Image (cartoon, rainbow, N blue to C red; front, side, top):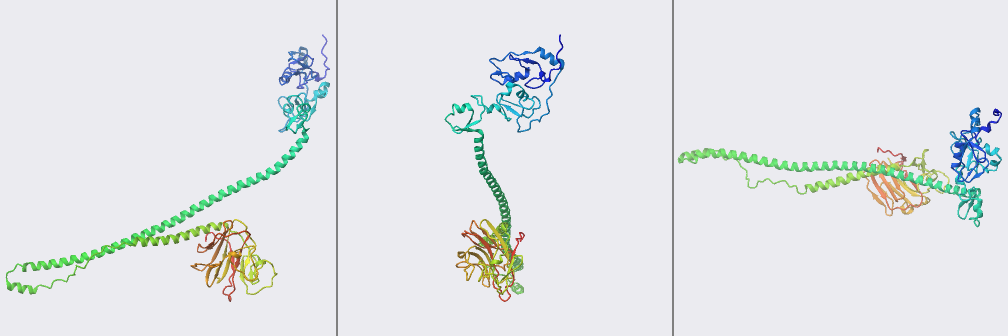
Length: 541
């Protein structure tokens, strides 16, 4: 027997599907050889059976037989086909459909075979004339989904009428009268729409995220407010409980003292009566023998020697009156009510002040608004009357007659609070004003004119209105707090040192920015030279 030709190239011993050395080689009716596993796997996914090399179609699945000669030659020479080093598939890349074990990256996809191939497994399509006729495209995943189910052709067109992807045959049949464009063109149109939607959606997402944060912040503030309310409530109720206990003790003490006084009076009277009874008893004992004598002489002589009867009280008018408790409870309750009202006001004012102090803002004075008589410190936190008219630029926002100054900062919503020291001053003005106020000439500083302020002078403390509202003042003011709830239309004033609410203007209508304003008043021969000082809030006050 002639020896086998050992000069055959290695590709003669390799399967054209897996490109590796034949493993159980079998021959198709058209004469091409494959690994049994490779050709079986290839045909398992097909409806029509064809040769992967020459593309010959078979009406029935061929009955494969082992190529004994080729099998022996493979066993004898043990030839293997070396696969060149190629990149492995990475996430998002198209894998080779032929590779077993570690999959390599596909370099082309075949629209005839419906498979993707790495560089090694693509080699038959580049070598065999029949396979060269197959249509190769850039790697695509899910090739079966990219093919028309009816015509077995690539879906490369888009029907604008029915908004579906179609193949060339579909265009000439069912979609013949429909406007059809290439996928790329429709892709660009739809991508532009998508980018527009994304551009619209992203702000919507951000807005909703901000709303979520706003809601969470509201819940957080609500919880903090609830905790403060509970703490304030506990403080107030505890103080009221102590107050009630004290009045209960005072009531009991008053009643007990009245009872003790009555008991003492009764005990003293009883003691006196018992003493009289004892004296009278002795007298009775002394007289008893004499009352039985029949001797006239002896009786008269002895009677003269009897002592005078002991002095006694006329007890017909003496009585112990039970103590009267009528009105005691009423007076105690009236006192309790008055004390409770005072304590409640004090405690509530303190709690409210603590709450509004949470809205502290940092404000500084605006020199462009200051009346020429006023002097501002370098930190823009203090103002006093210099009693000398300074030459300043005629700024349109400057006060000319009213000795006041506004802050640089204004507020157009929400809540804000600031404190001003008024210690050692005999007159001053303090509050907020709207942006459009008149600042030239004579000015009415009332809410109607855009001013909400309290004014202190020798006549006392008033809230300027038409007419003015006179405010009670228990002690000299040291520091005044001003709180504004813009949205609710409330301006409130507080005596910070005494922790007392002075006055609130409610039902105000604000439609423009509000500015804090300070007026240190006239110098009054040096008696009112102390400055008004914008002070930081001290929560321990």
